[in-house]
Amino acid sequence: MSDDEATKITTPKISELEAEVTLTRGQLASTVDALAERLDPRVQKDRLVADGKRLVFDATDEAALPEDRARARKVLAVAGAVAALVLVGIVRKVTR
Picture 1 (cartoon, helix red, strand yellow):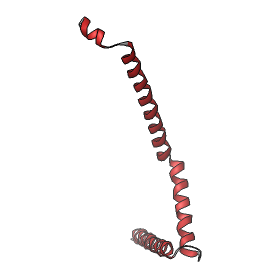
Picture 2 (tube, rainbow, N blue to C red):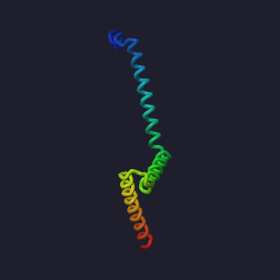
Picture 3 (cartoon, rainbow, N blue to C red):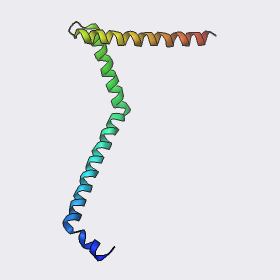
Picture 4 (tube, rainbow, N blue to C red):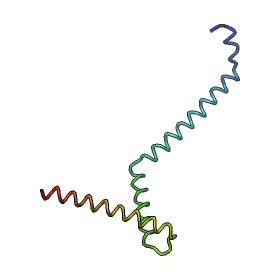
C-alpha cells in the first residue's frame, strides 16, 4: 500500500466502517436468534398444537366465522381421510 492510499483512509472513515461492522454483526446475531427460535422443535410443536386447537374450535364452535368454519371442516376432513388411508395401509400390511 502506498502512502497516498494510506492517507485516504482516515480515522473518521475507519470509525465509520467499524460502526457499520458492529451494526451488521448485531443484525446478523438477531437474525440467527430468530431462525433458531423458529426451528426449535418445542416451538414448532407448540405452534402445531395451537393450530390444531384452533382448527377444532373453528370447526365446532358457532362463534367462529362461517368462512373459518368451512375451511377448518375441509382441513379436518382431508386430515381424517389421510389418517384413514394410512390406517388401511397399515392393516393391509399387517394382515399379509
